[in-house]
Length: 285
Image (cartoon, rainbow, N blue to C red; front, side, top):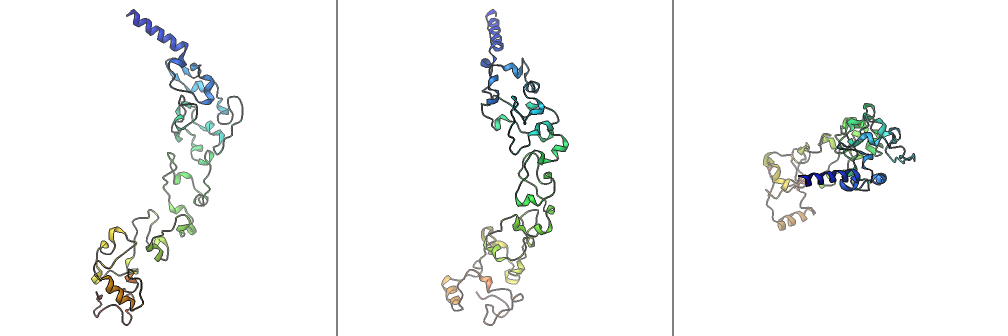
């Protein structure tokens, strides 16, 4: 027991005499390098580091504006007086050390906007640079209308915030679809789509092909593999390629896939003389 007690006594003495060699969890950041052998500059015995010790070197009024040597700091896009707007000066709530000589994301804890005073919390531009893209330049509302403080994305955008002129021009913010279906459609996106979500869309099929009589079919009869930008009539109208080609070349038709270009419902587009319907309105197979 005496030997064990002596060993513990020596260990405790070494911790107080050379704490940086005995218990240091890792290198300090470059700005704290001169404190590497002075653990008690930041730590209190048996209690760890405290924010109060930070203020002995970092004057609250100068944090983010000047170094501890009084040299002005280049703040870049973030306002230098940010730290002075906190509800309480609890450095340890955001900062840590012993993560290596370079400042990284590991050196900073996630920031809680609840630490900010209310007026600053509601004015994002007091700390953040305002976006310069076309969408944001046209908005006159607070960032919190679309964004959350936990992360910039994803955003929950309310199209009602836009001016009517912008609301009617979807392509001013969104890229236009390039598939064959959308290239054939003229008009406003809101004819089929809603601002809450791009899908599901409400498509007026009767404007392009009336689904009546023989054509009261399910979607996958004509649109295979849920690809609604393409269609086929060959699921029901079984033509041989040679026969289709021979009959259509006589009429000067080269595109054998776009059937509805010519074969439409007669109530919508009256059949031309010599057209492709038998008496009674049925398609010729």
